[in-house]
Length: 278
Image 1 (cartoon, rainbow, N blue to C red):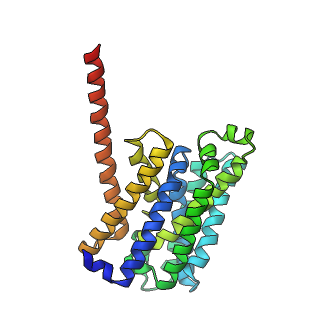
Image 2: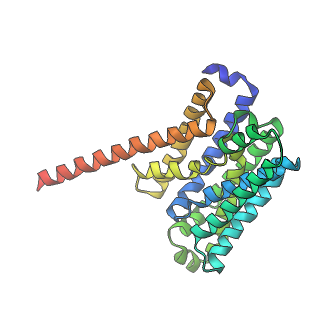
Image 3: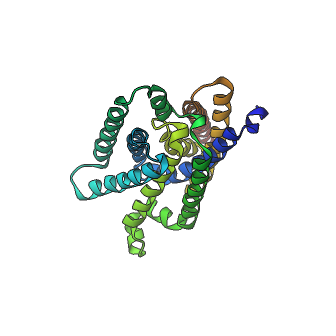
């Protein structure tokens, strides 16, 4: 196990993965509580399409994909606000179209099956040195932006009407939340896979909610679960040669099941104690 830390590609993957996992879990709390968590799944499909185009035309993957996914995030919000199409429909419309474009683009280039698998399921070798430096810097920007704007994001998450009455522009911070999520998804997508990166947004918050009922508690526990699941998952991936994204998501699934059982047992015990007291 210690051996994997001696390789430079693993060091880059672990550092980028930890930062992306932390950012995903923190942003995921607000997205899940606002019932907007599926935007992560939609943006990951947009990212797949953008990565496919970048590969076919030999563009820089990150430089090309980031603005495309950010624009898609803003477009999804605008469609939801300005048209009769609901958020789920807007996400499905854009994500399915982007996925189809990506598959069509790659199908014209021979010998790209491995690249498609890497895009869909992730690869530890996908993070080069320059990409790693760029990803680390941008992840820190996302993280510090979240910390700086935490009180406003908290207000917008729980009560947008109150936020507006307190002179907080809820729409602006909702857009910012979507943009930060888009950046995080792009940064982790090449290593974790476009089909699975959105799980890093959803699972930590859902697991944390099994055992905590406060926003602060869910946020802290979500971050801890995400970091731990990443380290266990990437270790399994290295040792067994399994896709890194799938390994991490399976760990998240197991954590969710365990904490759900713990919560269920705890609630039953509390009910029995209350009945005995009566």
